Length: 198
Image (cartoon, rainbow, N blue to C red; front, side, top):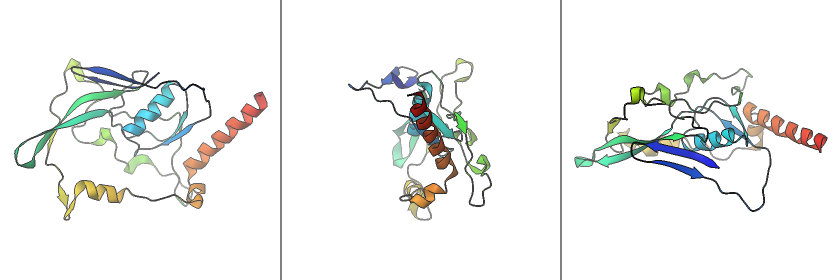
C-alpha cells in the first residue's frame, strides 16, 4: 500500500510498498518525540495509518514539506516549497506532526516527567508553512537564505551535526529510558496475549 504521498502545484505522486513473497507479522512500537522529523514522521505515519505499529511518545516535529533551493548570484539562494507530504490516509504532516497512539512523556533522572515546553517544533517557527493552503491560495516564496552561514567560525550545518551526535546507547541507558521501557512492556504484553490466544 501507500507509504506517503506528495502533493504540489503541478504534480501529485504516491510512493508504495511492495509485498514480500512471505508475509511476516510481528509487533512494532515506534518511539517518537518533538525531534522526530521528516522521514521518521513519514515512517511513523505510514505504520499508524496501516495499523501496522503502535506509535508511542510525544507529538513529532511536523516537517511535512519538500523544499528546493534556486541559486542566485554571490552564493545566495532562495528556498521555496514544492510539495507537501501526506500520510496514506491523507493527513498532512506539516506543522501538525504525528500524534502518538500512546502519549508517554520522557522522565528525567529524578522520576519527574519532562514536559515538551522546551522543544521547538515546526509550528513554533516564524513564518512556518500551515498544514493546508489557506483559502485555496498556492504556496508562495517561503524564505531567503544565505547558504551555509558560519557561527563562531564553524559552518552552521557542521555545528548542528556535531551537537546531535550521541553515540551508541548502553544497556544501562536504555533501562533508564522511561519511553523505551514502556515500549518493551507493550511488546511483552503482545507476546503474552498471542501465546494465550494461540
